[in-house]
Image (cartoon, rainbow, N blue to C red):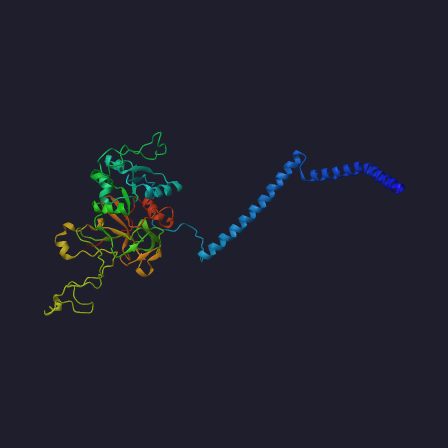
Length: 434
């Protein structure tokens, strides 16, 4: 029994001795193999590091080129889908052209609200279009606006036409909007008191600015202000009580494609309408053009249907030779022709060169709605963009908001066309004969 234990102990000692003898060579071999693997994966010199960088650059360049090739193929495919045929020309097309001057632009705001017009500034800033930022108090204090600006853009803001002119109530203390230690971010525009509005003097200064050749761009409620205070003769606003529109996109049609305002604009352009507002136009002051009744079926007596004889009951019709000549139907976006009766006392008849020019109208009812809510028919076919001459200048009226919160990029160029052609807006205008 003792012999067995001694043999076991002897065997264990021999095994331990052999392990101690073989361990160092095995360890050194493992170290050598590990070192080689590390050296194979890591650069050990400046040349190796530079080679690795060059390899990474080459791999990135190859991947980038693959993306570029795929993009070019996608562009070619899109071009083939959008354009049926492309033709190269030996020279530029021979079409009427005029030099384009860079206008001096001002964006004017009220102190009632600056949120909506702020999106106009954002669009101009994003596109790097230079402009001056003024407020209605600046316009009221400067009788010579045309010395500084060629185009004044008056984006929509809060308030009615009367509030834009009158401003906020003047009772109690002034309400400053200024940069201070407590309000360090109010440095875009400042005033000692935000309560004063445009005032009648400001309206007169804007009128003088336009009459001297300037262009005043008005939108929604500022267009209503221009109409209310006599800056847009022959235009009235339609506020249809039966119509429900809440921030909808409504399709439009080009009425006068010869106007520079319509350059590049096609039918079915979606216009953003906040409340379904539109315009009516007339050639005679004191009358409201484009009534909501159907001018093709409207009857002087107000009796009967379109197929009945239009005569008071119980009275014999006059000799047909004495009948008043039937007027041609007037479309909702058109102004009724001037009559002989109106020309007998033509004081209120607007001269042909100063009559409102409809550029865009809303589409027909069946295709009007592009997106949003529309309940009613009163906006269909009504004028949406109108150019009104005033002496040497122009007042442009938008029933839609062409620069709404960075979302209506398709209608931006209605505004840009006004800037690019501010001194050529009469191009293509056809004057009435009477």
